[in-house]
Image 1 (cartoon, helix red, strand yellow):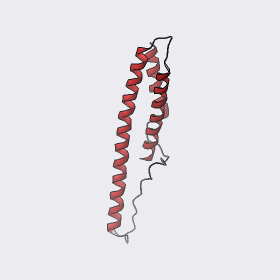
Image 2 (cartoon, helix red, strand yellow):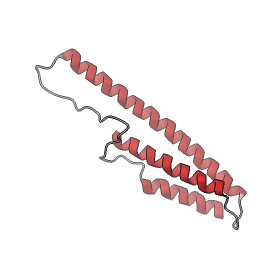
Image 3 (tube, helix red, strand yellow):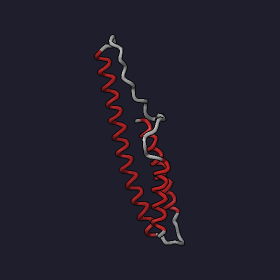
Image 4 (cartoon, one colour):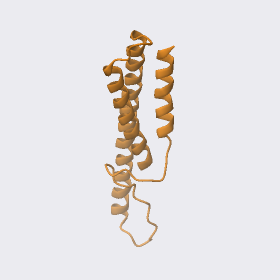
Length: 115
């Protein structure tokens, strides 16, 4: 029963942090450039900017995938640790793992905000 409670707590933290998109920018990633529409702009420069924006977006997506895979693995490990404890003992390792998950979930949220 304790393992379900801790797992539900982790899911609650992840959902509370909110892994959905939002309007703020992440300081680790530059904002996505907005397309300009002036007709006198150099087409080569415009294509280069679009290519750079596309590459930045692909890098953010790869980082999100990597981090969410890691988040899933860590949550599974936490559940395994909790399953090995009883209702009277909650090890320090379990608490540390939950804190790591919380930090990673927050990082994932900030990356999603940058999109």
